[in-house]
Amino acid sequence: MNDGKVTYRELELYLKKRNYFGMRPDKEFIRSQLEDPYLSGITFDGLLREGWKVYLQKMLERGSQWEEIRKEKKKEQANIRALFYGMGSANDREDGRGSFVETDDGMELKLILHRPGPGEKRLTENDIWKMLIKKGVTYGVKESYIRRLVERPIYEKRFRIAQGERPEAGEDGKVVYHFNKDFSMAPKIDADGKADYKSLDYVKNVNKGDLLCEIIPPTRGKEGRGLDGSIIPGIEGKGADVSAGMNTLLSADKKRIYASCEGFPVDEDGVIHVCKYLQLENVGATTGNIDFIGSVYVKGDVQSGFKVSATDDIIVDGLVEGSLEAGGNIILRNGMKGPDGNRFRRARI
Image (tube, rainbow, N blue to C red):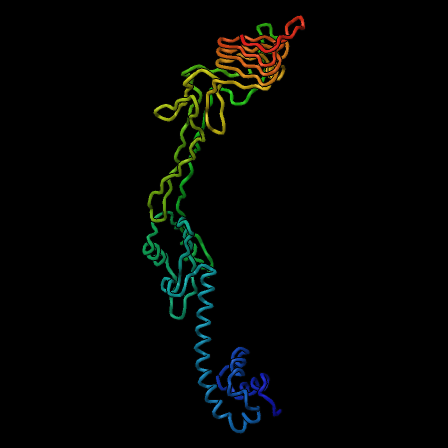
């Protein structure tokens, strides 16, 4: 042997040759011995000649401690494995032969059979039922599954033996509209079947008291049952996303919305309004004739051949080449062009 510091290989051979621990020393144990301060100042020959008796006693003591550490590690690894496979710790097992795994929502229960130890008998159906009763499981038990596992046991695998009934979700609330939310801009068809492209029904007028929409409430879904037989209420659907806005009225039972004045109904992100004031960019082929209950404000022009009718005021910022009919005032901020081409400047009628 060399006269230098004790090496890993030398210590390994030393321990194997003498077999002090009745087992093959592993690498981790040998490394732990090399880190001992006693070995830092002694050669291998010195260990053999003078220090081996003292060091051997220390190693024997440490070997005993090391065995305890190894046992603790094995137990810890077994518990980690048990958690990974859902078996629980050894203390959680029912008489060492079976354990349960339950889902987070408590609606499924799985049984894991453990191989019987020395002197232990296999689980019987009666044993498993006792385990279930102890756990409080009385509903949804799969009797045929239990019988099959008892007759042909498979160890360390999960088998579902009880299943609860999860509650179901109900239907969401709905809104039935009594006005057209989306402009179809379809021309009116007369009695002869001709389409009038100047009458596009751009404005959908309503009167005070008209029903604007019906709100159908959500329903509650089918109830469920837990593994203990308890009733789990069904899940209620989401309510309809609608509310009463300006110039509207919600019924006492909160199931209907009515117009509280005459005007033009609109749905603005789930809020129902009735507008008494209609604003347009221009009146022409894109809008057709306008017939509105309330006041009309046109920011641009009223083109030739088109008509604007309102029960209240009409205000036009641009040029008017068409015709206007109002129950209130008519204000022209840029004048009007007559049929002979003459242009009238600002006017208030």
